[in-house]
Image (cartoon, rainbow, N blue to C red; front, side, top):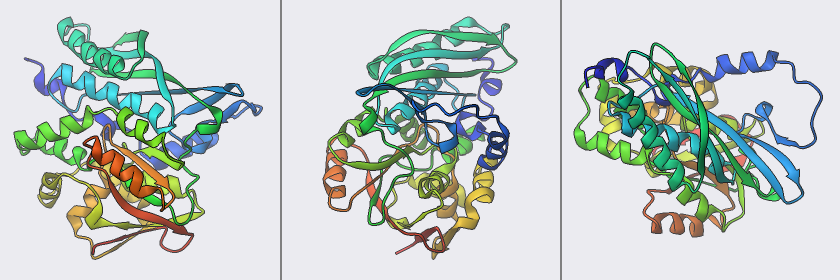
Length: 343
């Protein structure tokens, strides 16, 4: 397509505002009177809002949109939708409806927009939801995503900050898609690496979430723009710590190679600046550090559950073809908050 370079100029979850800047803004917002039915709101730093309707039913509400991180519009649409749908699964919910969010230049070929929305629609259908409408505006660049509503039982919500000492941490997807997409934009990524990254970014977390429903999940989040370490920092919530085993963390080997070539993102450096003071690396090479700070687009679920249940969930996740691994465990509060060791 003629607009290829303009279409993909750096997007996905690397386009998110940094966590530090965002927190400063949110702290200044008027909160209004508390609503007892708002079970989870923005002040919890969780993945979505949850509002109680009845004793047996709550709805989960989220939205996510961003600029393209790949050249193909159809693939971009699938990735953006997969990423937006993920927050529902991270809360323990089931997808019901979705609305398109579209920014698109009026001078561009509308077939490009059609391909983006076709990819998004296919993923909503795969999720078992209904695409119910949306909103579009003329803009000087492309942005696409979804506002998604799901449902969950109020007693079966997965918060992101209720892990317990002794819990094991399971990650369901490989890390490194941000670095790979960055390398691809400058012509340094292999076709094989991009194909694997796209396959990961278009895999719904629905399938991992279905396995989680068999277990007592203490905490869950999806790993996106704030990186594995950034989302772990939110999970620890200022009252817990954790130990990560770097050699057990699933990742794309190509991401390590590209990080060694300094094919890095500004968003990863923002993540390092924000959360680096809470992390200590023990024998971990620079490239691995970068992968752990790498912003993930449509990343996997990060799950905390008891040590006796973790092997069963891991086996179930691996049985459906996911590259899941137990990557560490939660401990009592200590210094550092996050210790990453290389065995």
